[in-house]
Amino acid sequence: MQHLKYLGAYPSNLLDQVRAMIRDDRLGVYLEKKYPQRHAVQTDKALYQYTNDLRLQFLRGAPMIDKVLYDAKLDVLHNALGHHRAISRVHGNKITARKEIRIASLFKDTPREFLEMIVVHELAHLKESEHNKAFYRLCEHMQPGYAQIEFDLRLYLTHRDMLREREKTHAPNVPDADSHATQST
Ligand SMILES: [Zn+2]
Image 1 (cartoon, rainbow, N blue to C red):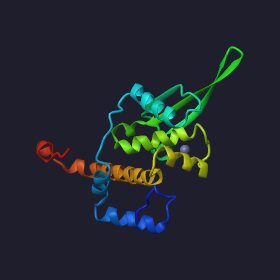
Image 2: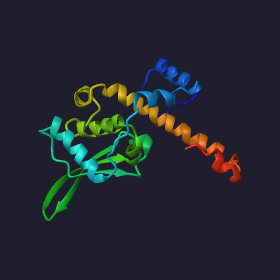
Image 3: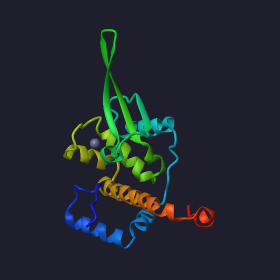
Image 4: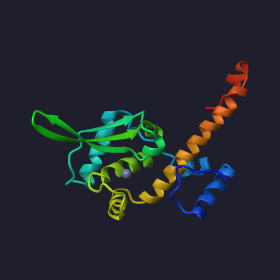
């Protein structure tokens, strides 16, 4: 039985459905049909703007964010849902807390709903540090359908890993001379 590392928290009957989709190779088509649109948020500056706009729209009372950036070093499994932290710095005898949001770089290339989901998730942490009911209520408020989109993001990450595995196993068998003819990108 295939282990689904991004989906561990979901009920087993749902995971069986996912395994059936994987077996029939339907995962990619499902995701492409449901999430056909990319987004144009490609720089840290654009990401800051995007995040701050959402904050102003939904969380006027929340603290200012000092910095938002794409981080290539974030561990996808443990930090697929972004990374949030308040950094305390000492300036002279004053301690200032900086609000910084880091988003895994892979979100540069995802459908726009997944970037929105991850940013909404991180913004919700400005108000609720735990993943409790109030937290998810806030996420749903900022992005209707949040729970389904988070599930689909986990499908997306599963699919992405599978494609990479496939590439790894097939690549060495392709003779160099033929590689241009058989490459599918
Ligand atoms: Zn979280």
